[in-house]
Image 1 (cartoon, rainbow, N blue to C red):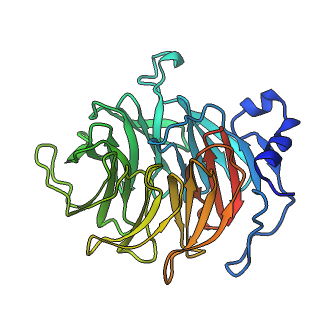
Image 2: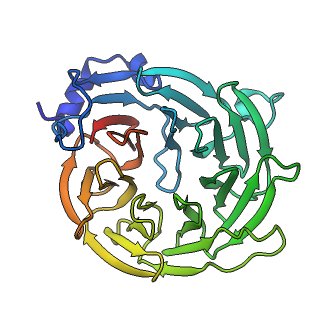
Image 3: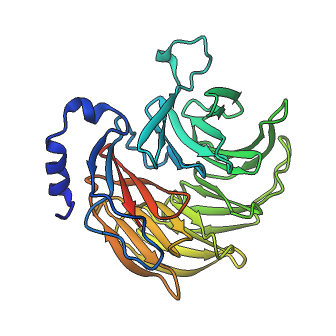
Length: 355
């Protein structure tokens, strides 16, 4: 049975309201099947799992989802961050990033971004109040609270021991949490930061702005008092929210256009030129590369609400689509193996797909 919009609704019909309110409650599970090898085709008719994600904000500009290299999914649902172990389908706990442990939960901060360190031990959390928190997930203890921003922190990205954070006011702060004064550098761009990602090698930082600019910065972090302009800037007609560096072609970065644009673009960072593009006829909300599959996945909003798998070589070509969401596919995250894809939709449902 194909899991289309109607099919999804039927599958959820028999679930209780209590189950739909429980984070990561399994609402649907496909018959078990072995993990695919790179030369096998996935079952495209339905997701492997459908999960409840209550209180997921329908916010195009936030980044509340990340999948760690140790296999733990972190997702912000309202003011809490839930941790889910993907291979056992078990909820591991919940982080409540209050401004102070002495404050009541009613004063918890609304979480707008999360990002795992490369080793999967430390979780960075950005809030709409402008705070950046770092947590030791195993011990469930907060390591630092950094209050350098004056506006919401919608995007985070790690480069070794440095966590970079981007704010609504267009500031990018770099934090080394090992230091007493952790904020070690500042970049400034014209528009608010709605996308932020360090290249896999750590030599370039890409930042997207709400006014359609893709800025590329070197790994020279400057200082708190002295900043420098980006190394290069590329433009598109809409906000640069969805972006991802290609892990096997280090000079390439992909961006997706908003509802008024809908174009998927591949940029060469060295030349600053667009080397390939494809019209998706839909808002591009999210994207992630799979090195295992040598493919790019994009999550879409109006009018289609689907996921598209693209083959990038020799030129962008649509390989297949995944259907099942009834709202915008706001966020995507890939498993460490590269064979599972988690999509989070505006209808407060998550789907796990075999890729």
